[in-house]
Length: 165
Image 1: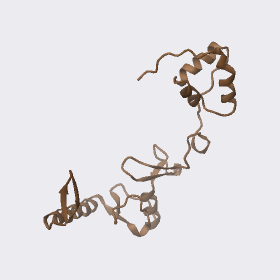
Image 2: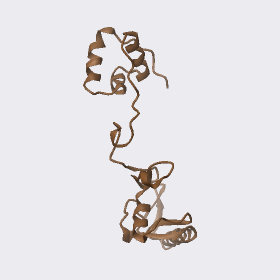
Image 3: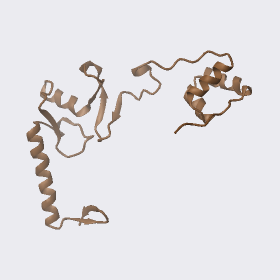
Image 4: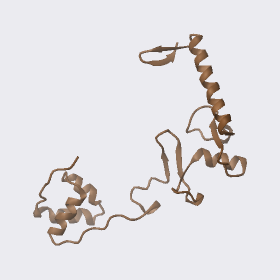
């Protein structure tokens, strides 16, 4: 959604420049005026000021750096590991721990299975290195156990979700 065009009053020029000089980002200043940062750049040029450079820093020098740790959309922890020479510098923590445990890099056909099912529990004793087919078998066994628990009445479907009986 495009933001509406807003005229930034020249009376605010000194206040804006003071905020930028104090280290506040161009984006946050623009947000306070309910405009995009490009519009603020435009008004700075109209006032005869040079455009600010877009941040080109990486890693620890980047203003959004969070220590090199993040959680992906599937719930696995990613660590900053640029030494792995991949297309992107982040690697799954469970892969790094499993590789350290077995003393080598994983082969392409190897997967890491979390024995207790908790994706963030990356202790070496909770990780099992297995082939892709063995990994599928393990998950199929879990699925069969869950189905058996439904059949035994230990798990029931209630309020649009499965719950313990």
